Image (tube, rainbow, N blue to C red; front, side, top):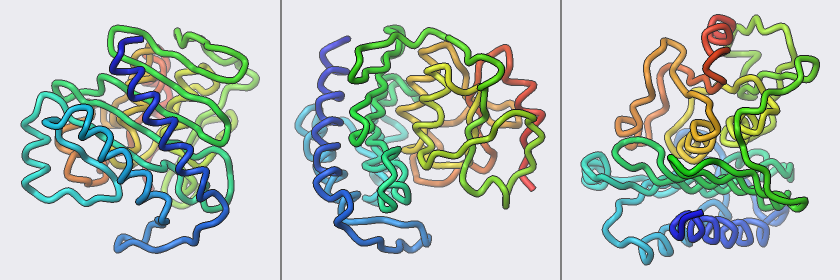
Length: 261
């Protein structure tokens, strides 16, 4: 693990301790887009903004809870490196005291996910990756390299958003699961516990997990077959077309089994 990835892991773990300090003690609030937020989201993001700014002052920062103005977005799109942060991915799960929420820290480099840390504070687990350097699942029992291991057919599942019953048509014949965190879904595919994961989401929900999944050997593409334009999404827009993360040899088949209503 390079020194920079180790520093990002340390920051994500420290941010996770902040999230846990509010766990079960904060109220839900509604943002303008009607999604949920809490004081914990804002405190974690403020911490990461400050510490990443100290680590690399010239690297633009894009975070979920601090709406970036057009000037910041323009700088980020033009920059070689960009920090992308989701302080608590799975805020609804967090507020419901489900332990599947994550702190996500990513670095885009050259317009693509390069470094990724997906940390689950309540479960003491972390997924780590650096492009060209491999991917790792760190857990209390030890470290496990993520190298493309596939799930047994009898337990293979497809990981999906919680609104799947309203917004999607899914013909997948196996189990379909939703665990409350977009980033965790893609990380579980990288770990070999799912055949694929899909969602329409924002850059901060995906960037860290994309680094993990791609470094483990998976691919992330829009259901129309196009690559994700990570720079385009830096303005906070939600991807228009669902993005499917899966193993290359199974991606096409899964893509045929998922569609928006």
